[in-house]
Length: 238
Ligand code: ADP
Ligand code: UDP
Picture: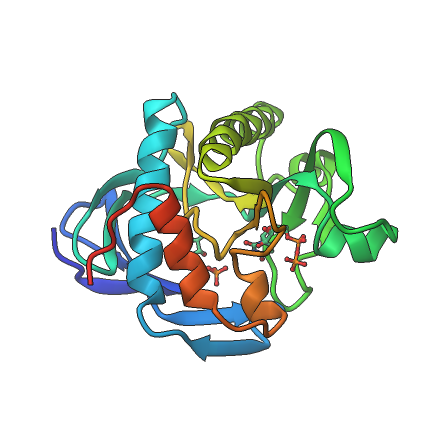
């Protein structure tokens, strides 16, 4: 399957049309953004690392019953996916407090929640991805009640599956973001799962092994991503 025409250029990935109307090529670029695209830097090989990490996670989710857009990895940086009609909200689950919720609610970083906390954000960089509720999603017609329920269910299911996988790798899954879309009427997980869109803390030291290293200028970003891959048993191609 060939990448024919650029359909969409995001902050970290580009989507290309293919000969098949139902399929896209997603190219994972080295661009690394923070603060809704205010800062963008190139981290050499990040695209290829995330492409491999994402392939591993998407396959695990699919094996465990989560419908995903993922078809196959095409090259170091490219993946073949089903073309979805994307729903413009980010579904976030938090197991512990970090990032925006700490600032918003003035709570201590690392605080564990009694149960996984589900939050929704509108995908809009200009507005800095404002938080919305299920009611906004339905009232604005971004998704139906049934679709919203399915996204909620699949996000929590993903949390259960991935918490266990990362736990075995000595990592705590603190929070993450998912995006869903429609494929022939069905709600399907799209976009990516990589350290760009989640928080992973070393279970022993508490050290961040995700994009917070970039956001907070801690250094060792790619080393951390490679370590995550290694701990999951992924042998990275060079
Ligand atoms: P952003 O849009 O946040 O800058 P990316 O750089 O990751 O993010 O761009 C990828 C874009 O492709 C996103 O807008 C995402 O919603 C979209 N996308 C991801 N998976 C699919 C898919 N299977 N079908 C259609 N669009 C997709
Ligand atoms: N996240 C993301 N894309 C976004 C916003 C958040 O992938 O546009 C991820 C982020 O990496 C984290 C989780 O969603 O794992 C929760 O992010 P938060 O609301 O704390 O925002 P942040 O402070 O990270 O901007």
